[in-house]
Image 1 (spheres, helix red, strand yellow):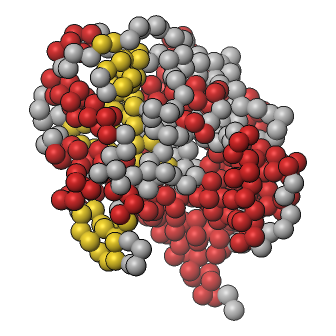
Image 2 (spheres, rainbow, N blue to C red):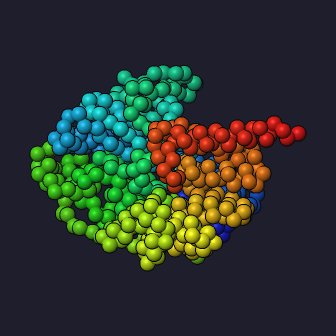
Image 3 (spheres, one colour):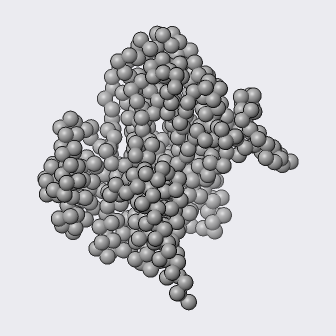
Length: 492
């Protein structure tokens, strides 16, 4: 592809993933994309863009190609020393020896970082719960397999990991090892794009972390995206929690309310609490850097959200900061919605539609009163809030109810391009395709719902649903799959 065509493709990639590429990376990414197009049998860049937008499998392949994670066990050892000698003792001093360290390996690639943390905590006899997330479907699949070749243990890491490995087979190039179940049972993985506004989301375990590792990924984002990510990571930490970035990552000093703390192991970021200074003086003698309170440039949404596809002339903008008044109004509005007082919920939120969470409550309430008006409101809200996944979900539901199934399919497809692990979006996609007579496609969506629900606690509440649990949603998906199998059996 020529330079202009490459720019068009990169613009779509940036819109979908949030990833940005420097000028010195263009030649490399052009070669990667060209090879992918050849493998897929696509010759025109316009056709490639069209496939990215409509074909989830090709989108997944694209993400896998452009997000090849360079990772290995115990990368940047000084940072793990900081966890061992500062974070764990500090946590125990504050909450007791039996406390659980809740940690998030963001952009975990194939899992080496998350598993390194689990091994370190086993060595320190520290109870641990680790979440690993990544944009790439294939990377998450590799992480869950927990099978690695010798290259993943370079830099002397094998000495720390050896006791937790079982050799499975060897090739002429490298031996292959599988991590022990004792390590793997402390780590769970799920798909997440850091550039989306889908976190914090405690309902799916993304929030209230003591430690976040977000290393060697911020370099791939534009400054405004980095600032928004930093604000969301801040909100995902408990007071006193730590964020560790890589030594080569951009500074976050002016990106959020983090306090930068200089230690013998490097400079890291802490969400402050009132006891921070005293704790630092008693758990390792680190020297805090200057502490400047910086206003967060992007406030978190109350509703889970993700970045959809948008045209080049519709840039995403961060939501305005939430005020105490907005918080109070939203609490009242949600109570009114739950109580069935839809008119009150509409009235309470109508002057707060600059916030995506207010738009969600407004549309949900309005849908009970005037579905056509709710659809119009939702479509308008998405112009202002292109990051709000729940608004895309609601628009697709309203379109399906209006029997506009083709547009409903396109709308729910945007959410699925960005978060294929969202249960209700998968379920709605299945329902829409069932209505369109695409039974086999619908079956695959319901099958995905079943798999996603089975990976969760049966009593976990499913986001975007009417307080449905994973068990209830899985049963509904199984019911739909049974119905489709019966229909397919009758089809000649």
